[in-house]
Image (cartoon, rainbow, N blue to C red; front, side, top):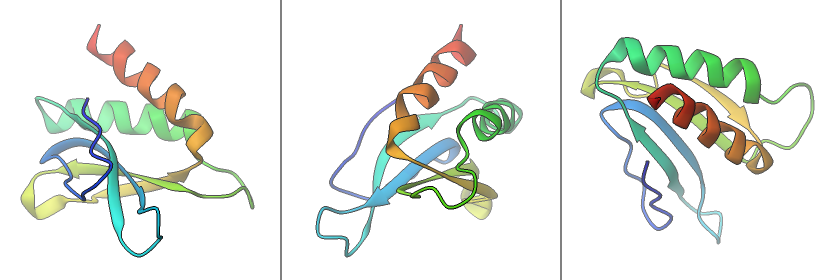
Length: 97
């Protein structure tokens, strides 16, 4: 997993978390988690979505994208709060074990 706070650079296959720049003028990559396969990316994405997705009217500060290759960036996505970022990291780490 790599953080890239100053640019927007989604991984090819995996999970990409983006937010807005400090001046809120452009999207930036907050976290990337490349995976070996699309199946692995889907498994992690849907687990993360079940545990981290924002419900109702909570503030939505981040978007998690499911990336499945050049033609399928953002194949699916969900919104989450920054407070859930540590939980997302834990899900990714558990998926690597």
